[in-house]
Image (tube, rainbow, N blue to C red; front, side, top):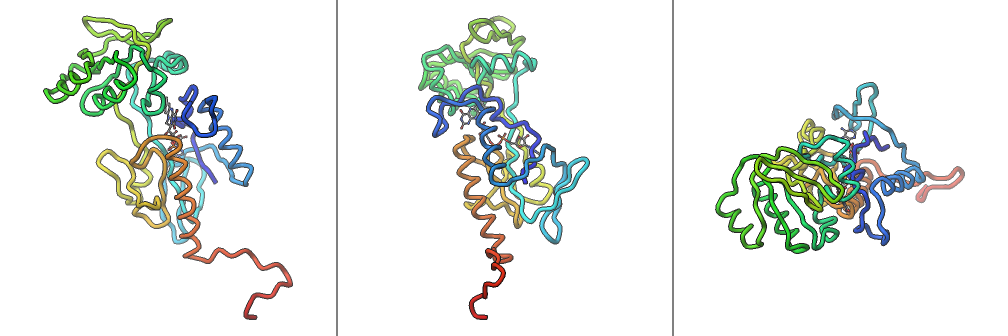
Length: 284
Ligand SMILES: Cc1cc2nc3c(=O)[nH]c(=O)nc-3n(C[C@H](O)[C@H](O)[C@H](O)COP(=O)(O)OP(=O)(O)OC[C@H]3O[C@@H](n4cnc5c(N)ncnc54)[C@H](O)[C@@H]3O)c2cc1C
């Protein structure tokens, strides 16, 4: 069974052009519908709900939502992350995303902003790395610190090397315009074709941590190369583990986790196709 409370990051993808098999592109919403249809077709139960607590039991696990409990021999956590947003109201945020003026994944869609006037919101190594990455697609990259935080000498040197403009925050307003997203600071206002917030993410690893699984300093669940966490029969895949946050990577990790999970279950109790009535087992 799949228990999901429906806030996939993929829902924010207006149209992805880097998913194998979809040369014309596909929206995140349509892609998720296909995945659900696929899972249902092969018998998975899809349950809308949020798991608040996960406990070990003698048989495996008990997962508790506010009003129901589910028993499982194994659990795969694919709980994802949530990108931290700049201060924009929900409606503007959704419209800006839909029009491609607000973006969260340079690796996914950087080529779509080729030659455009692009801003990265953030500071520190993360934001500078994004600016450096985007600079391979356009010569017009500006980095805007969300707070008054300055950039240290090293970061300024790196930004100088790619000829990126620096604007110091705090940001006072972000408004959607016909031709882009307007970002205002105390002394300046500019419209960008595309704005990439690089403000970090909240990583949904709480359920793994409750059970004592290890996590990195930033909160990603640690797994071995078979997607096993430090807790027996608990696996993790997707953005919630450390790696390139891409659907193709999530799918690959999920495939590895599924095979490992099945094989581990077989170690515990052999997985055997039931004997048909009348058939004699070998050796009898
Ligand atoms: C704007 C944008 C554009 C992107 N474009 C692309 C692209 O073009 N190509 C690409 O490959 N990737 C793209 N990505 C990245 C891609 O969306 C993610 O890598 C992918 O969705 C991660 O999948 P996941 O299953 O790990 O997490 P998610 O898709 O985020 O799913 C996690 C699910 O777990 C649920 N959940 C969390 N905690 C609980 C709980 N306690 N109980 C029940 N449910 C829970 C959440 O509600 C959510 O539905 C983009 C991301 C964004 C934001």
